[in-house]
Length: 337
Length: 132
Image (cartoon, rainbow over all chains, first blue to last red; front, side):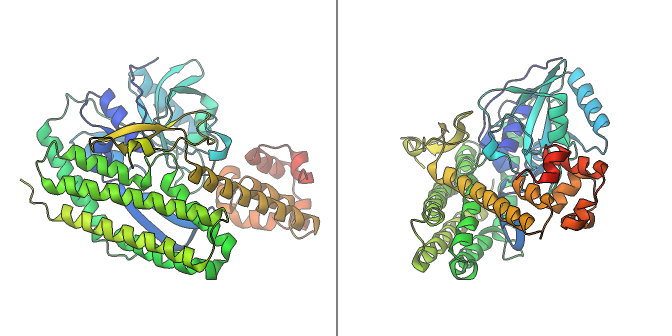
């Protein structure tokens, strides 16, 4: 059983799965940046004290599942999402979907994902891929961050669907209902809703560790890392920041370029100068994130290491805070028609 | 980021697949551009793995000094904390903490050891010897 499925490579797993599943369900006009923006994927949080892989807990995006659910609900497309406690039932349900000719999205852990290079196998459980068919014991897999489609044996697929640890996927799968397509009017409304949601979480979050305030907070913390943690550990922490920001799935600059692309695409639906302005600012912010990553690399590779270097690193984050705050202000002041 | 500035450095992922980046073309429009990798993030990944190796080495030292059981080495090597290991083995977190003591570990049944060995993808013998 093989469903008709077109694999299009994407920057980010969940937005890619969303776009590809929607396309498969009959909706052709949702691109990856549109899915990212409508699903309000842009986010920032730094949780002090909490440690992930012995490093700081930093996220550049919303919780797994939020982008797919948000995009579909804004577009008015019903979604089925299921978790399982039993592995057999999870496989059985997947098979029955495939028998109906339905491609489904699965949340998986990457630790046991055999086609990933060894260097990438961390206990990261918020990866997403599409299963679009089965041939005997081989499942046909479209992993949107990879150039080509691949396969997993039933055992390999079960192992990644039931990965353990934080955000354990519990065999989770999801798919949108078939649709006759969405009108430009619906997309217009969905864009507006997505931007409002992002402005809310990035600009008006009640916690100082979330959104633009979180970026500035992290910037201030970083300037103290050298003294508090020592050079080596501070370097490790910065390497973790860079990995969260740049590793496969962000499209570069911690999703900022993808958000810039979204705002630019949004101008086709809303004739509004603020959108183009904000898009340019997010491009600037993405470039600043990249410059900050370069500075961080100087530190964890041992080329840099003075307090002034850490101050400069913190300074980058302050700049980013300023630029993104300005961009989000522009977005919040849009007079929607 | 301009389209021509999208880095094309060798990296671990580049051998298997290039990745999509969003960048600006000459006309100021966003386009996608495939990247082979970026040296900055390749070295971030190296840094993370060097740390894991270092932790595993420190664990070996502890095992030699009878301060920890071989379990610690495999946990560091596989970067599993008690929560993850508990998930894969079904053994309680507090029990795993006890099993990190060499004397408690020495008395474990083969059945329990098998559960740990399966989680680390090694044999019981490797597990007992710490394979070091």
